[in-house]
Image (tube, rainbow, N blue to C red; front, top):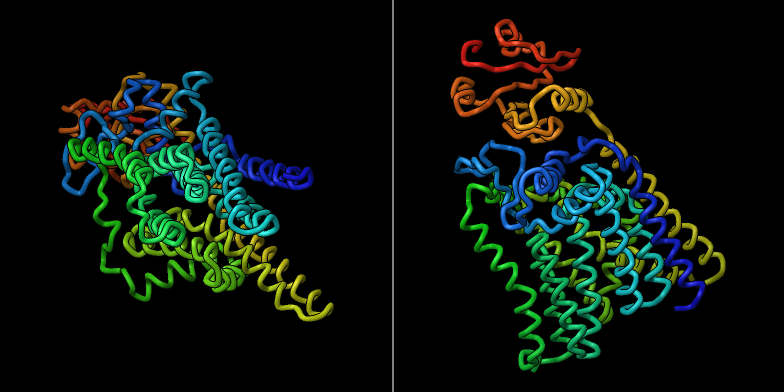
Length: 477
């Protein structure tokens, strides 16, 4: 790399890291806190209870799956808990602090940015790589999800890194590159099984570069074994503990939403146009999409994008329900935005048209950032600060091993704030729950009829304007 190129790339990486420090110390009660607190609880319980990476534990005793299987050990055996384990190591060294968990995501987001640059530079040019990387770094949607307490930033970083070493391997046929790529693919799939869809661009790249004899390559067999074997072993472990696995069947097509008007509206208009590429960049995305079909390297990005589209289609309900499910769009989408940007500039035929297309292209990127921030800025907000205060008070007042009820519509966010194990919804029978070990109720609805009735007979341990903590006994119910 030339000195100027190194400086620009370093500046973009610093920008990537710096932007994601925004509200780093905020409590885990912002957008999608239910998923973040589950992840954070596993890391915290690795420190508090037992550091067994094969048996991660959440805080909640509430059944996870659609079959209502009891989960007395609080197992949370879903994705391989590598992210949680890394966070737990930091917790052991420096103490439990959500900022440390967010920093792990920020690190992986920055790592992914760097390898996206290397990949785009190898496939296209320096200018395309620089713009793609800048867009990826500063995209508001990607900024927010690059500092969440979730394994997704790590999964995306591993995916990009794996593809970079994969492209290097196909070109050089060096065994070392094959192993490195396979290891990162394995880690990506363990972090999020959705990475399996990346085998679509992988197969395309193998066939167009190695031809019909691709299957005779012995390195390829080892590549697939290393990539898939850890995931298959982990899935066997998951299937042996169904009580610790959350419901997933609804993610595919609950309500038969696939290919309905709502499906297209939510994914194309609400997510792609409004939130992720935010009008301006969506125009460049379309231009880049067309441009990508004109070259072998461009078709690799096309295949990458199509693999994400297929994933969104297969997991239709999950993608309609959760906006973070579209995070895999950003790497390939950023490269396409960059291709579209320079394709727009290439339309100019004279100096005046060059000026017009340059201003237009830059304006589209800036509009995307402005509108994107408008849509995303609310994600950082703590909309229910009362659960933070209630959780702090409960943590101060209650015994460390107390089992609590922190009802929050089956959302574990409130329970997480108490730093205790227990239930995230109100049990059907409080007497049965007490007989099974529940000792306290922490509520953020002190004026509800049920809580007011309970507070008449049950001891009030703590009270605030927006919360109440009750000691539960069989005699006060």
